[in-house]
Length: 191
Image 1 (tube, one colour):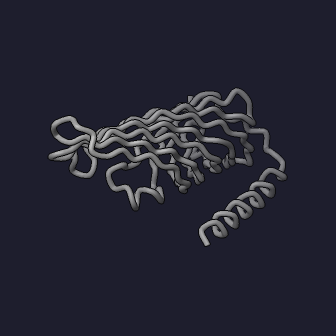
Image 2 (cartoon, helix red, strand yellow):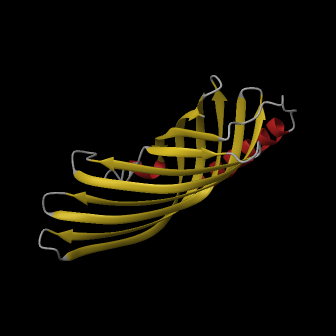
């Protein structure tokens, strides 16, 4: 059932992207540099993994042409869920873009690496999560320098964690891979 819904979603987005890309551009150029915030709204695996919360990230946009965008990003979360934990994320997005008036639509690949530590009273969990997958999104230019956008992605993640007790002994190792969806809200400022 999940695979059917995911496949149907991908087909629907592909069809809509083709309709948007067939329209003519108005000639407005996409800004070369930008900086923004990537705020994750909903990640399906976070329903099960309460300790490993998403990281709000700082995004740097670089568009060498009106059709290509590179988005390096970096993020940090400290002290979430009333625990003494910290997560750091680095990532890169590579996208093909199309602009129609004040709307810019993009699709491509997003890569991320999250490393973190969760400290509870009697144990510590060190984890590493590496993710990659296709992403599709859009942004609306509110002016010459600001935009608001959203993104949907389906990612394959590998997750590795080691749990140590308060004396430093390893009490559990967890390695697994899974597929999940990720939605995000973007606020960007362009130079």
